[in-house]
Length: 189
Length: 189
Image (cartoon, rainbow over all chains, first blue to last red; front, side, top):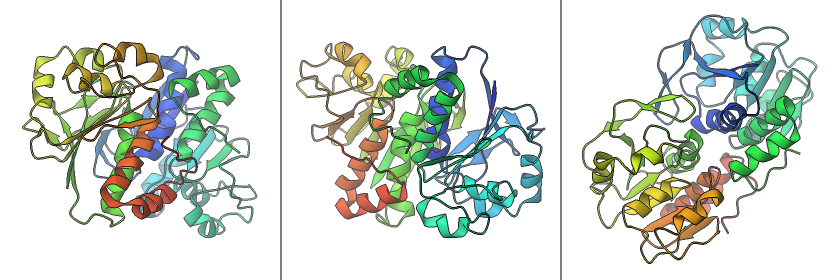
C-alpha cells in the first residue's frame, strides 16, 4: 500500500495536513504494517500559501507506483492547472490508482479530465466553476466515485483522510484513529 | 499583532496546521492588516513526527517580541521537555504574551511552570500526566485562563485557532474564516 501526498507551491497547508495526519496514523498506530508514503513534489522545495516551506520526500519521477494519489487545494492551483510539467507529472499516476482530492485539488482532477461523467464536490465557493468539468456537481462532504474521491473545503480534508482510513483498514481502525485525533464530530455525509 | 508558531522535531503536523490555517487567514483574508507571523524553531530544519521536513521562517533568537506564542503537540515533546536550550528559548517569551498550546504542547507549558494554579486541558490520553503540573485539570475542548490557553487533542487545534481568531478580531471575522475553512461543527465548548 503506497500513498503519494502531492504538494505544490501555493497549497493550503491544512488541506494537506488534514489528510496526512489520519492516513499516516495507519502506519504509526500499527494498522497497516506495509504502508509506505511519500510527500511528492516536482520541486525540491515547496512554498505553501501561508509562506511555509516544506521539503518533499520525493522530487519528480513517476507517480506510477502509488495506490493513492492525494491532492490538496490552495490558491496555487491557478498556476498548477496551466503548468504542463505539473499536469504531465500527474498523468504518470497508474490509471487504476485512487485519486483523492480536497477543495481546489478537485479542480486539478477536472483539468486532467478525470471528472467527466462523475459526481464530484469541492469548496462551496468553487461549485459553479466545477461545473466546467462535470454536470454532476454535488454539495456532499465527500463524494466517492470509486477511484475518484472528492471532498469539499479545507477542513473536509480531515473527513476525507478518515474516510480513506476506513476504506483501507476498516471501520475499527478508523474509529481508533479518529479517537486519537480527538475528532469528535466526524460525519462524512 | 505578532504571532509565533513554534515548531520542533517530532511535532504533529496537524497540531500546527490546525492553528496556523485560521490564524494566518486573519491576515490573508484582510481582517487584521498589521498581523505578522513567524514559524519559529531553534533549528533551521524541523522533522515532524510523520517525517515531513519543515523550514522555519525564524531560527532561534528571542521570542520576546510576540503577542502570541502558539505551541503544537507531538511525540517530540518527550525530548523537548528535557532540552534546556529549548526550555530556555521558550522562557524568552514576554511574560505578558499569550501562550496557546494544544495536545502535548500543553505539557511544555506545565514544565515551564506556567500552569501552576491554572485550569488546563490536553489530549484525553495525557490528562492524568497533566495533573503533575496543576490540580485543575478539565476535559473541556478549550480552556481560557487569560494569557494561558490550552486545548485537547490534535484536531482541537482548529478549534483553538478559531477561538483565537475571535479573540483577536471578533466574532464576525471568526465566522467568515470558519466558513472559508468549510468547518461545519465548530463548538469550542
